[in-house]
Each structure stands twice: as C-alpha cells, then as structure tokens.
Figure 1 (spheres, rainbow, N blue to C red):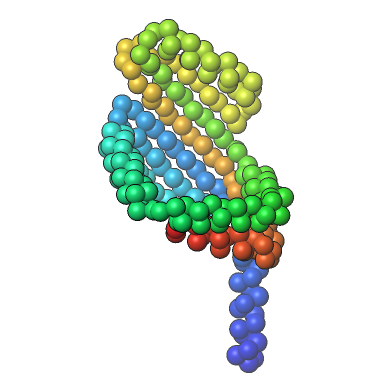
Figure 2: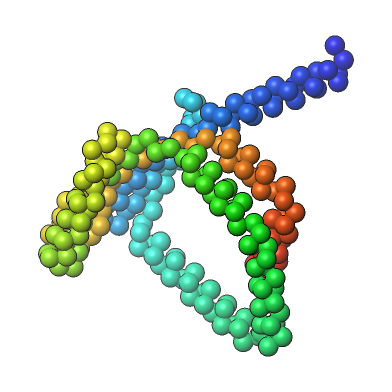
Length: 216
C-alpha cells in the first residue's frame, strides 16, 4: 500500500470521526453554589461517557465586585482620554463607517437569525435543579419576591427535569443558591450553519468592517 493511500485512509477516518463527534455532541454538567461571599462552580464536559474537560472554580464575590469596579473605572478613564483626543473628523469618519455597515447588516440579517436559531435548537436542557435562599432589605420584599419565584416555577416544576425552589431568609440580607444543570449541545447543525454563513462574501465583509471598527 502506497503512502498516498495510507494518507487518504487516515484523512477519511479523521473526517468520519469528526462527523460522529459533531453528531453526538457534548454534554455539559454544571454545579453552582453560592453561600455568603463564596461562589463555587464545578464544570464537566463529556463526549458520550468520556470526560474531556473538568474544572472547579472558587471565587470570593467581594473580590469579583471590586475587580469589575476597577475595570469599569479604567474603561471610563480611557474613554474620557480617547474622547478628548478625538476631533470632529474622527467622529465624522466613525459615523460614516457605521452607516456603511447598515446595508451589510440588512442583507445578512436573515442568515444571522437562521444561525442563531440553529444554535438555540441545538441545545437541549436535560436537567435544571436550583434552590434559592433569598433575603432582602425588608421582610415584605423578601416574602413578595419569594412568592414570585414560587409562582413562576409552578408549571415548570411539573416536569421531572426542572425544579426551582426558594425559601425566604429573614435573618440576613443575602442571595444564596445551589444549582445543578445538565444540557447537551449537538454541534453538527451549528457547524453547517457557520459554513453557510461564511460562504457569503457580504458576511465576510461585515465581519471585517466590524473588526476594523472595534480596533478603532
């Protein structure tokens, strides 16, 4: 058997494996827990029964809030500095570039919606169990919003795959929860939709123009 024949067989096997992988999809397991200021997340991604990714995270919510506040302040300072440096010509050029995107967006809007729909329909929620402990600044608000959650979850809780429960916390002001979520993503249709999307020259032009604007 020649080297060329071996390469063709290897490529064919890889292609078949790739199609099988896209058809079977991935199953994602999420376990989320927030208690006081500690947030824990356990993420596992499986292909059939084989675990291909697993990671545990632990965060302090106060640290996250501080980091987000710092990022927001830095972005605000950069924006002010950038605004001060810009002159009328720069703003005019930006407006012209944005106007130029409008025909590209309108000509591709149907294909973008089709792509989003394919992605949404390819996600199958298999399990959603969440318990919330809710404590707000007043007893009345705590009882009211807990009642809203009970009312919202009444019909979905009839399903064996969905469970949303809540309890009021009249002792302290806190929002804690424990959640287990399992969903499956089939990748074949989103992959084909992506290929279809990128075969359009106007879509490639739109992406390129957006890339230039983002870098502006």
